[in-house]
Image (cartoon, rainbow, N blue to C red; front, side, top):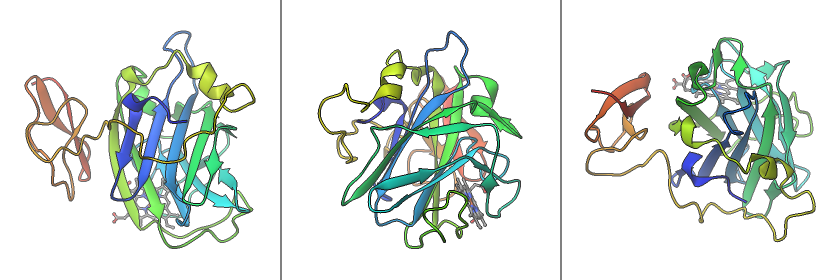
Amino acid sequence: MMLDARSTSQDPAEDMTIGLVLPPLSPPSDEYIVQVVFPVSYGWAGVSMGGQMANSLLFPLWAYDTNKIMVGPRWTDDYILPTACAGPTVTLLPSSTVNSTHVNAIFRCQNCTVWEGGSLGSGNLNGTAVLAYVASSTTGVEDPSDINSSFQEHDYFNFFGVDLSAAHSSSYSQYVGGGSGTTTGAPSPSTSSVPSSTTSNAPTGAQSAYGQCGGTGWAGPITCASGLKCVAVSPPYYSQCQPGN
Ligand code: HEM
């Protein structure tokens, strides 16, 4: 299973896919589902819901015992090992898989839209959010069977912008129940079927809404389509085309 492509970002270089689905805007909710697909050979991967390392809700995750997945909420206020944080309830959904090539982690996080020092979409769940993802492609965590395990710094990080207004899904409750016995067919663990990306690594032309338009190492478009302006949402790493002039 892949989550709604409108809120999915694919990173072919690092072979990672991140997806986010929110429940419908009304009634108000403080939860969402995150999907992270990464090579099983990686030591661990991580997502930052605030788009930066410090003062964000972080989810490190890794595979262990052949086909199990560990994921839990962490937080830090500095560039040091994030520690488990109270508040969020993280539930790995049964549609998650580990196969010979990829970890496909799909987890629900409740009480997760606001955290110490920040909030998803800066408090506007119908606005835009910048998420970050990281990976340690070579080095595993110290004790994979311990959710509080320590681990070393990632060797990769990147960002993507999400249009939260397009990430709400009326199928949310089906995602939550996904794989619990009613679904047929195995979930797809591969990243190959994801049709589009909110990051839009388009090499030429003007960037579209919520696509990247600048930042450290960015080699794609630096101009935005008409009616959009390039905003440095996570300087110096990530600038994004947003409505406005
Ligand atoms: C889930 C786990 C983690 C996530 C999601 C995460 C996320 C990020 C992100 C998004 C950045 C770049 C943006 C920024 O500066 O805020 C970053 C930078 C950094 N992180 Fe992490 N991080 C994680 C774990 C760790 C750990 C365990 C360490 C070291 C013990 C670490 C050390 C650093 C350092 C030193 C930088 C600055 C690197 C640079 O600017 O070149 N991180 N992290």
